[in-house]
Length: 132
Image (cartoon, rainbow, N blue to C red; front, side, top):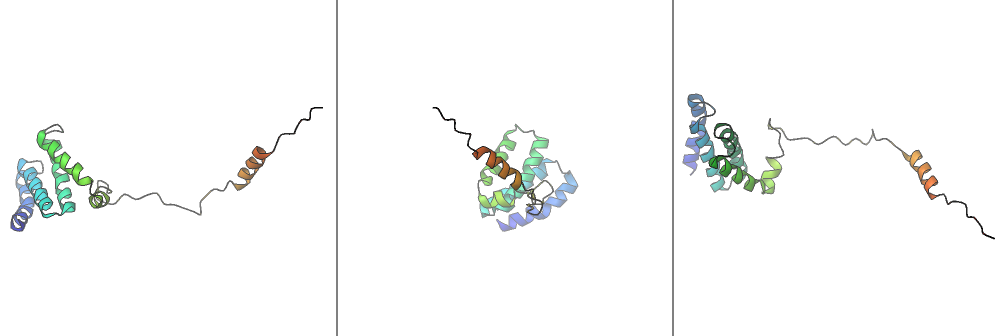
């Protein structure tokens, strides 16, 4: 398996240069590389190549083609693995991890005075009217 994987990985740049990015040969090679990685249990490498394959398939074959649907189904299955989901799908298109907004304590606006006034207003009891 490793020999086949090495041959496929080494031939991929040549196939892209020879046939072009959106060729059947490149799509099949990406798919085969992803499948071998999946068989070897290397889910992160598998999903990386399968995602590339899916992008190419959607462009070349369309989103409703059976090959595209099968690749999409396989990627959805791999997304259920927490490690794959956390490390691969938490990234943006350019491959950089999505960052969360910065939590700033220093810029926090305080409404303590207004809150206290509101609390006093709400808790004030209305005058009790006495019936005699």
